[in-house]
Length: 111
Length: 115
Image (cartoon, rainbow over the protein chains, first blue to last red):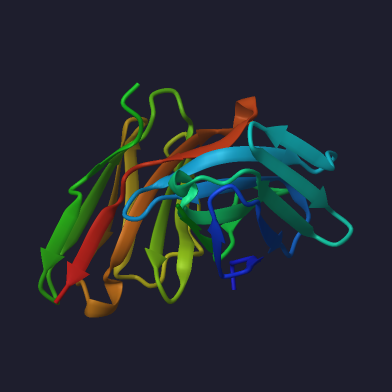
């Protein structure tokens, strides 16, 4: 399979709560990226973390990367109803420009 | 910039017909990617180009699929003949990784239905 794995597959939380999504990948990476997809739309890039970084922040987003475990997590703090979407991790592999997307986590934030 | 442009946005066709999907990448981007998204298989990379040259087409499902990039501002994905199992959303994306621009910019997608 060309996909990485993400968990949970779906997550339902109340507005104001934090949402954590996890991602695992299979090969050596140059960087790992997270994307968001609203229903019926294309994917939108959120944040990129390089292989030599362990944590990165952008607004309400926090991404961690553990290359020894080939895993990453995305934390959305103080979630809003507008955060309802699917979230995908994408590993950008070394030795080429092939980007492998995970299966995605569907996040539903209840107002 | 208008972003990545795809056409048509929706396509309904009958089995056996030829389908052509079109993409205009962001000006200046030198990598272009074609993806297919379905509920069952998720987001799959079909093929990608660098400077108009196909680099990796290992994701193209079979010979019925072909992709071209005749110039830096235009690419097509063709399915001939189309089959119902080709029904999916097809996305085009572009990026500039040679200059550190690893993030991909996606078009709105073409929803293909083959009956």
